Length: 94
Image (cartoon, rainbow, N blue to C red; front, side):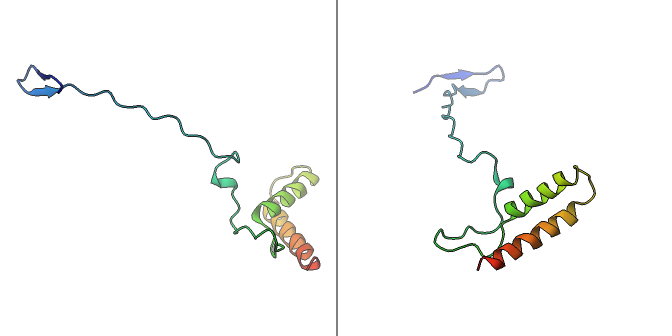
């Protein structure tokens, strides 16, 4: 049983037990947190995807931005163009 101490105010104080430190948790594989995670649910491996993923659209829109010379102000235009182009590719592959 721990010994009791008395403070200057006359209250009894118990000796505090040292806190146990937790071991550091292992980080999840994959790098970045959920901000890069796909919004759509992944398709089972045996079924082809029916819609382009958010990541695919973002990559193609980024490619369009690079091809334009990194000119700002056309992000929505690039996104819509990438989305349409990928949807046409997916429809053609069915």
